Length: 124
Image 1 (cartoon, helix red, strand yellow):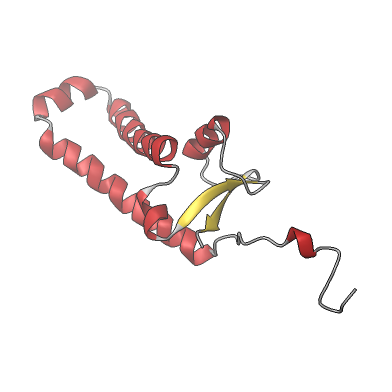
Image 2 (cartoon, helix red, strand yellow; image 1 turned 180 degrees about the vertical axis):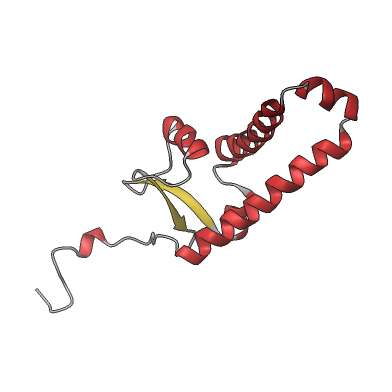
């Protein structure tokens, strides 16, 4: 056994966890995209339809905004496995075993972006 060999040489991984700056940048890009989507919807859809959906309850407007934000994340993560911010920062989601996410883990990642079992990793 040479000095460069070790018992852990067969476990070498090419996947490295994303830095704090990369995660922050991806989150900021996603936030900008989400704000753009919300403003675009309010500009494109006629005011009568929006007022009809919201009604006199102000909490409904907050629910509608959060629904749009979660819908964006849901579509991006379920279909494309990453959001626009993750694409631009070259990040991906992997589970604790460094494998692609299952459907259950993708649904968790929609609501909770980073958990113990789902983390951001760099794309090499």
